[in-house]
Length: 201
Ligand SMILES: Cc1cc2nc3c(=O)[nH]c(=O)nc-3n(C[C@H](O)[C@H](O)[C@H](O)COP(=O)(O)O)c2cc1C
Image 1 (cartoon, rainbow, N blue to C red):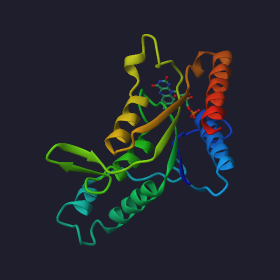
Image 2 (image 1 turned 90 degrees about the horizontal axis):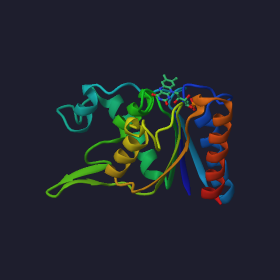
Image 3 (image 1 turned 30 degrees about the vertical axis):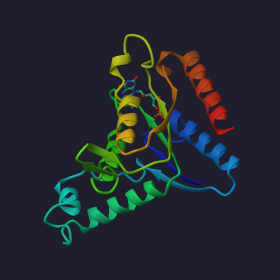
Image 4 (image 1 turned 120 degrees about the vertical axis):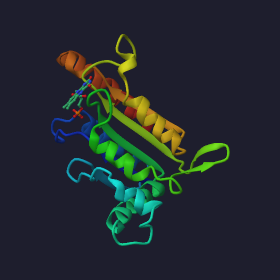
């Protein structure tokens, strides 16, 4: 089993909810699969550049075989290969302003490449990836139910883009409402930890 572990929290591992939960899940998956290989990508310690026009030129445009966008293309290619090689992807992501942190969006922009991870056909777009993704998410508020459900552009966005790329098996584990006080914080973390134990068993 190849595991790709991605973290996107701007908080460090001592304080981040998603870093703690995603590493717990990866540790449990690795314990259950002793031959597993783990690739770790910290999008905050090693941020990817925002996409500019060189990525378009690198993959489809005039500079396809040129040197201008060679660095962009080789970076993007390595990220795509890393994702293709993964049987299981664990993404730890907080909600920032109702959606993904921009570091994680930059990663999506580097891997969602026509002809590589999806293709266009006469019938419409077709995802080229498979495998399983665990989304390990956290937010200050509560979005899985209640009046702010329509504000959730985190789990919905990530599930949509992963489905678009062909990954249909997306499981969401979340610690919600951590800003509602220490009791809710602890309850949300305990509930997420319980889910992690169950899915990794
Ligand atoms: C820049 C920033 C933006 C945030 N935006 C939201 C938001 O829109 N909705 C929300 O419920 N919580 C928001 N939060 C709170 C985080 O989602 C919450 O603290 C989460 O648990 C952070 O995960 P982490 O501990 O792994 O970093 C925001 C936090 C930061 C730092």
